[in-house]
Structures are given as C-alpha cells and as structure tokens.
Length: 202
Image (tube, rainbow, N blue to C red):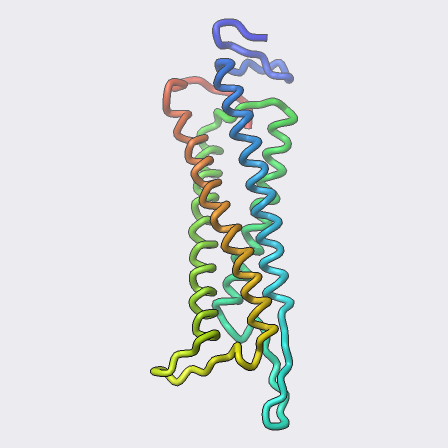
C-alpha cells in the first residue's frame, strides 16, 4: 500500500517512491533483463563459434591448421565475449531477484557499480569487434604493400565461421551499448526529483 508516495515493500521495509516511478522502474528492469539475456546468448555464441573454428589445409604436402589462436585479435574477441556473457548472466540473475522481490533501485553505490560495469563491457566489446573486423578484412583481401597474403582463399570455411562469430559479437556489443544507456538512466534519475530518498531495494 502507499500514502503520499510512501510505499511498503514485501519485506515490510519502507520504500519511498511514487506509483509512476515504480511503473517506470519495472519497464526499465524488463528491458534490462531482455538485453542482458540477449547479450549473454550472443556473446556465448560468438565465443564458441570463433574458439571452435579450425580448418586443416595441405600446402606442398605439409598440413597447415588454421585456428583462432593464430590471430591475437580473435583471441581478444573470444575473451571479451566470454567475459560479457558471464557478466550479463550475473547481472541478469540480479535483475530476476530484484523483480521477484518487487524492489526499486535506490542504492546509489550499486547503481554506480552497474553503470561502470556496463560502460567497461561496452567499450571492451566494441574494441574487440573492431580489432577482429580489421583482421578479418586483411585476411579476406590481403595487404599487398605489406606482402600480406589473402588467407581466406585457402581457408574459406575458417573465414566464414569467423565472420559469423564477428557478426554475433557485433550485435552483442550494440546491445551492450543500448544497455549502458539504460543503466545510465537508472543511475542519473536518482539525482533528479528523488534526492534524499533511500531504499533497501536493489
């Protein structure tokens, strides 16, 4: 129940908020949960696609095996997306728990931690995608001035699967950018018309 904007949480802990704020928070939390699940899935798919990608080619009676560890940018991509998937899983569980409890985020240190974590992951994922995409372009078209050969002419399957992994990572990174915007909104609305209000919700 509520009176003059003062509500009571399921645990009988006073929660100071208006009805509009709670509705907005619920919508934001649902959008956040969907995006975190999407990032977790796409990040995991990207990491698995790239990390499991191999192709053996016989060149002058010598077998050459292409794998993601041959390119540092792909190693970075796998690590970044693995971290993003794990981070999104943890944060997604936090969202589920807070939604079940019906709590509203008013804890500023936690909001800052979520905002900072999302920002770091967004920059990390975008950097990894950019580095991997640049390496993929060089592998596809080569660089005659530096005498770099076209690798994809010989390792077509390997390059195609890497491309699929980079595409998944790109969608995951864009989702993380949107999510970082949502976490920024969740943080800075605490400094709006609700100054001085506190809650045990998280």
